[in-house]
Image 1 (cartoon, rainbow, N blue to C red):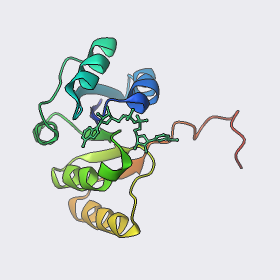
Image 2 (image 1 turned 180 degrees about the vertical axis):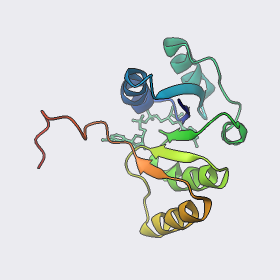
Image 3 (image 1 turned 30 degrees about the vertical axis):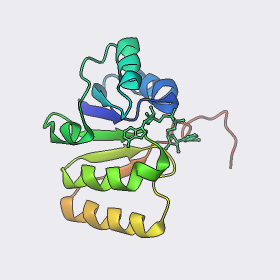
Image 4 (image 1 turned 135 degrees about the vertical axis):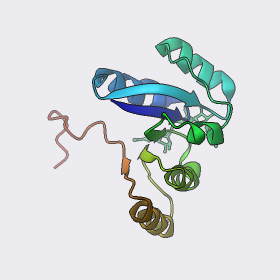
Length: 134
Ligand SMILES: NC(=O)c1ccc[n+]([C@@H]2O[C@H](COP(=O)([O-])OP(=O)(O)OC[C@H]3O[C@@H](n4cnc5c(N)ncnc54)[C@H](O)[C@@H]3O)[C@@H](O)[C@H]2O)c1
């Protein structure tokens, strides 16, 4: 089982990430939430019976039970939150866009290699055969 915690509990977390992850419940367990706006975290927590709400992102990163940080915050925070997560020995699943500057991506690759972690972009339509984009 992969234990996952979500940062940013807005529309994408609520409408896409949580329902998809719950369908994959043999693989992923959502063990906690954090949002800069506590009421957003509370709403998502109540709706999906996810008991743990962290007081801060730092507290989420300090939780030894978390394997993957799922980042659904606004894009301007992604690179900083990804880098902090890898430094805390976490793997990362992040909403698009992963970063806003290519230099940030280079930094993320460098730290991932050093820490032997993985960061990837959440793509909920990858295996959707009805979506003919190619
Ligand atoms: N895949 C797509 O096609 C697509 C489309 C739209 C948005 N997105 C991405 O999804 C992400 C979330 O978008 P959304 O529509 O759910 O936005 P949203 O505004 O509904 O939710 C964002 C949440 O993050 C919280 N937040 C803000 N700053 C934070 C911080 N520093 N730390 C923790 N939480 C913080 C907000 O309180 C809010 O609850 C963005 O990265 C956006 O780029 C992707």
